[in-house]
Length: 148
Length: 148
DNA sequence: GCCAATTAATTCGAATTCGAGATAATTTAT
DNA sequence: ATAAATTATCTCGAATTCGAATTAATTGGC
Image (cartoon, rainbow over all chains, first blue to last red; front, side, top):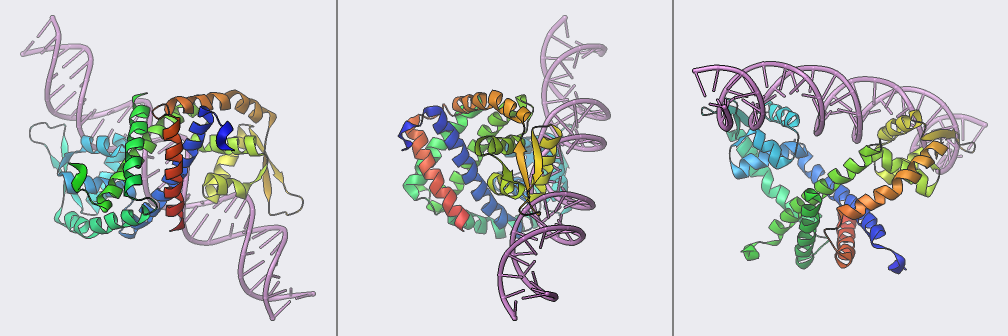
């Protein structure tokens, strides 16, 4: 009975399913992260510094995909919580680096493994083969959409 | 070299890829919708009324997955734009129905086909078989995550 | 060396979303 | 029949995000 559907309708359906899946997953991940006192954006920024080291503030926005004004806002919050510090760049005085603090590192040491575990739980709906397939297909989709 | 990865890491990767794909797709779809003077939530609500008929305000929130206070906000906006009207339910005076207006219907007559076409373009990164696979896999993922 | 264009970060105001609490109507249980 | 619990909607304040405009610093072309 799904036979009569044309490709446009299939795409629309895929859009709906993708949106729903993302919403469900995002909600679970968010619950996990908020337990640790961070919101998803704060977590993403802190994780970037934790796993990839110091970053110019501008790069943070690029990698986490938020507007520059939002980056300022999130970095402010994390700085107030003492999870990171701003350090002016001596070579280029336009640039400010963000560095994770001891306290931030300690926090991530504690919550990152738990987070990874939680993600593992959330994605138990698919087996390894399926996850690999999904990654492949979603990458194709994502790249294509980005290029448009 | 991807061989050494364990399932937890694979899930984390899938999460990242899913997030990125959704971000790219969402951005494109949003561009399309904003061209027509609506934001994604307004579009979703109007589309619901357009394709599924009148809805109690509460149902709108359930189907579009927004909080009740957000529903009030969006319905207010659409009502101000004359795309829908509130109609008190005579059988249960707690309930208010939202009905799409002539003007709203005319708008959707014009933009819905274009929207579907735009989605078709955005998802050209995958062929029919791949879309069917994605739908299947994403449904599994989404349902599982929702049940947690 | 100097002006124009570019780049980094910030401030500001607007839009959107949420959750908690309020209000009103209905239903359930006693 | 009434009190208590539930349901639908709305109000309000807070959080988050964005885009446009601002400030400051650097770079490139002449």
